[in-house]
Length: 445
Image (cartoon, rainbow, N blue to C red; front, top):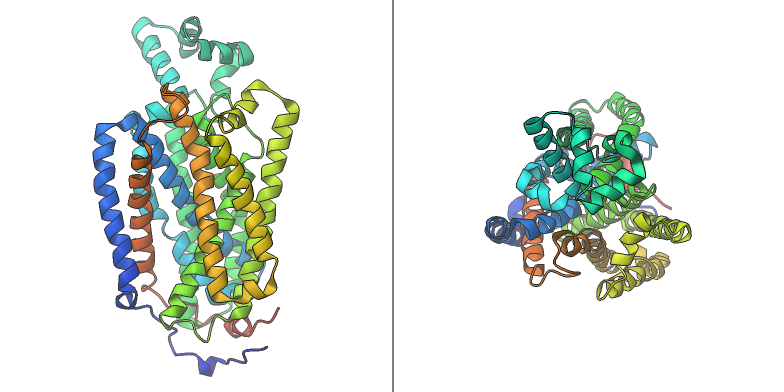
């Protein structure tokens, strides 16, 4: 049924969020963040090697939300979609959390953190040091090092001395410095995209000119490719780089699917929370929940398709370097986590989101979104943590390390959640002078 809202029915200046109204949730997240940061500081100095994996897991989990928020505003601007105008500011604020996220991610630039995570960096640093002390090139130093290092010897045998420096990274062994440059570049690109689009959105609230919408659409079409490359290369540098023997041509798409899926779930939860506080009552309707629910369903299927395709291609090719990723995750208790992901990440949400009635129910779909976020958390954990034990020579599991994982998660998620909800008060909760707002409010699908 049509909502039939006009501009006269909406408050002049939009709706400004008052943090005091949501103080319980905001305060809880802030407290969890402080406790997590304190515990993380202790674990960082007490056991850097194992905690490095905990921090990477927590950071990348939140990174997917920021990337997803950026994707949704890019998609809706580039496609000139009108229905998303009512909830666009939620995505804009989520995408603009890139600066605090960059600060929390900066420990990955510390050599003591990089060393247990990325073995290829250690090879390069050792070769560079040897070349500096005894003369010669890094390639010649690698030649001598390979005689005593079976892992390095395998790589040298496979790719040759001349090509090894190029292979080591799509992470590039030529210099760990280039990894750090890309690291900074990822956040710069995301910040430029997020801040530019929100800046145009805010300017439109001053004059109501449609030119800002047109400009944003043109800008979004241009930066879609840099955005896609940023997500792909970050996923390779930070995650695939944990095991330089392994590679997958579908990895960037796999991570992207999780970013879009989880960030839409976050958006639905935030909208429901704001509505429970009395905001967005005339702006967001059951039709918006239905539309967002359909996108959740679409990316549930898309993630499953990419996940199965990646597994099937690696299984069919049966190349040792590729199969190791799945062999590790089918060993001992990890195999049960793999089965749980199949059931909880795809089958459960798929069946749940088939129902139009359930998607239109704010309470029910919000509960479903909590489950989706939990499964996304399990997925990221399943990607990062199984590499810890074998890489550090401590077996499949590192005893007691789950406490460090929990501390890192509380620190990053609590801090970012606190800052994000506080940031909602900076501007109106929806772009109140966007010419397409009324079309969005009255959407029927």
